[in-house]
Image 1 (cartoon, one colour):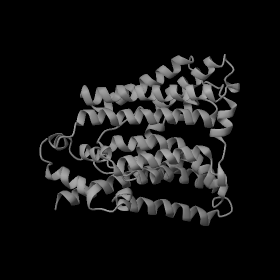
Image 2 (cartoon, rainbow, N blue to C red):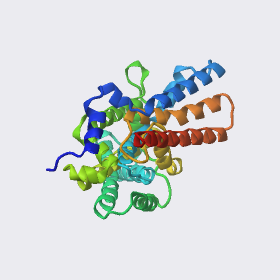
Image 3 (cartoon, helix red, strand yellow):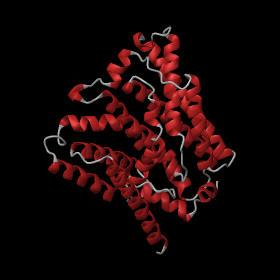
Image 4 (cartoon, rainbow, N blue to C red):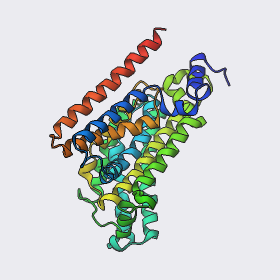
Length: 347
C-alpha cells in the first residue's frame, strides 16, 4: 500500500483526527445555515405564536420531513463523493410499488387485513428493489465510468416507468391497516410519532457511519480527490459502488415508510423528491464539489423548506414565495461553499 498523500492526510486529520467529535458532526458550513433555520422559526413564532409555536405544528413538521430525511441521508454520502443521484425519488416510488404489490399478492388481494408477517415480506421486497437500483447506479458509475448525472438521469426515468408498469400507471391503495395505524400514524412514549423515531434512528446510524468509521473516512477522501485516494490505497471503485448501494437501500426504506404513512404509493407526491433531497443536502453545507458535508447539516437543510412552507401557510403567504426563498438559500449555500474553497486554495 502506498504512502498517504498530503491532501488525503489533511482530509483525514480535519475530519477524524484533530477535531473533536462535535465539530466533526457539525462541519464548517453548518453553523450559518443553523442560524438561518433558527431565525425562520423565531420569525414565524413572533408572527403567529398561537398557530406556529405549538406541539402539533412541530409534530407535523417532523412527520412530513421523515421520508425526505431518509432519502437525504443517502444523498449526503453521494454528494460528498462528488457524485449525484437523480433517481432516488423514482426508486422510492418503485420500491413502494413493489412493496404494495407484494403485500397485495400475498394477502389474496385484501392487503388491508394483512398482518406483520406479510408486512415484513413487503419491507424486504422494498429494500431489495431499492438496493438493486442502487447496485445498477453504482456499477454504471464506478465500473463502467459513466458520469453520475447521466446514469441517474437514465435510471430516474427507468425506475419511474417500471413503477407505472407494475400497476398500469395507477397507485396501489390497498395497504395493511395495522401498518398505517402503527408506523404511519402511531406514536410512542411521550407522543413521539413512530415514523419520526424510525427516521431519527436511520439518521443517527448514518451520522455514525459517516463521521466515525473507516467507510466515512474513505467517503470524504474519495470526494476530496479520487486519484489521491486511489494512490493512498483506497479501493475507489468498490467504495463508490457501496455508496450508491447504500443510497438505493435507503430509498427502498423511504418507499416503505411513505407507503405506511400515506396508505398509498402516491406517485405524484414524490416526483420531485430527488431535487428536494439534493437541495436539502446542499443547503445543509454539503459541497457539490465533494469532500465536505455532514449529516447534521443535512437535517437542518431538510427542515428549512418545511419550516418555510408551514410558516407561509399559517401566515397566509402564497406558497410561491417559499420557492423563491428556498432558491435564494440554495444559491447562497453554493456561493458560500465556492467562496470558502477559493479562500482555502489561495493560502
